[in-house]
Image (cartoon, rainbow, N blue to C red; front, side):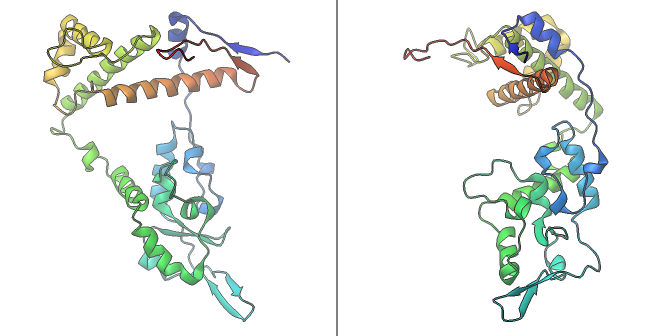
Length: 291
């Protein structure tokens, strides 16, 4: 069987690959399933359409089958039966019920719970389903008021997502078209600098990035060079941008790097497809003489 080797490419080759237009990923509405017990996890949607899938589910709302006769299960062989109670829908607006699994789920946690939530997290209300009907009411209250904050955070993210213009994370100091255009121009500049540093395999950060430093590192120095070269860039960056929206801090640099990595990885995977491949890795020793 033929093997394909991923070799180290020149900067020009990488740049030409990144600039290739990827086919647009479209959301297939057949993947939007009302019953959570039959849905695929939200993280299984391609990242390009994940928010579109969330928006579709938010429009539908929690799955609450009307006039459904909820299944009863016998306990301890004594004839006592328990099952889901429809009145719980009135107490918990996030609650939904799966007919397929005869289980309860959390609508907000399904849509916005972090994939790597931590050691104390579980998937009862997102993947497995809750079926302990004896203690259901107390368990539902405990889930909504959990100290880990996963439910409350997921709920907040859902509300912010539905009202992006009103949410704190998306409010502009001046909600004007001019401010939005300045933001897009600033983002384009920062992303262009990040791409150049990637293609040349250069470090982003400098040892001293203070205002008095003579060399603030590649990212900041290139930004200053670009501002001097292009007056239009100077108008939307540096001191001409909002103090908390200059988009040059280390956190933003990491976000840009992560976005570039994701886009490049998707392109490489689409080129390779289901064929065999191998990766050649060059090693280098650090200060401790370890590879």
